[in-house]
Image (cartoon, rainbow, N blue to C red; front, top):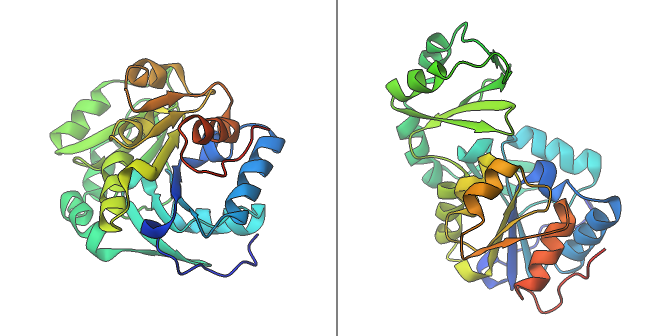
Length: 260
């Protein structure tokens, strides 16, 4: 898969674009379903676009595409929405005009966040120094809700995902606003973009008004908050299988992949 050359056809001219979370979603499901979805994407790159919308950073994403032979995305919304980047494999390069507002909202808050949450029960600082966020591993048995108030006092947002991660983000920045900013910047038909996720850090993306799927292995807290959205499809199949199910059920591509 990684030997294919980058296509020049803009996403706005393709029939359909998948904007998907990685862990548990694009990387979830059975081996057969993942293989079927990935092969279908590569066989239809002239009409199918791919955007990764993930908590992962660009270096991790590039390494994963090489090491796991995944389809390369056309664009990346990474770092829980604080990175918006274009892909010229193997490089993933931030789009400055789209990140300017994110940077302005962050105001180099990293040191202030780390100082405010130093020694906070249940939080262990992740070692990577992200540009516009600070991330922690969360121990739910030890976690103290006072961390939320400390973040809000800094005029920043907090996000708990999968009851294992605690992210501090610029105010009003997450996966949903960032994927909307990207698809509108690219002048894409919003009705032809499917967003896919499985955990609470996907909530803003699934609720942002684009066609959406919550895959079958989604966490219960996410399902409780999205099940009444009229633009969202609740899949039965897990991970990649749920994405395949939604593409067919919503009629998003005339040559949709068949279920594994």
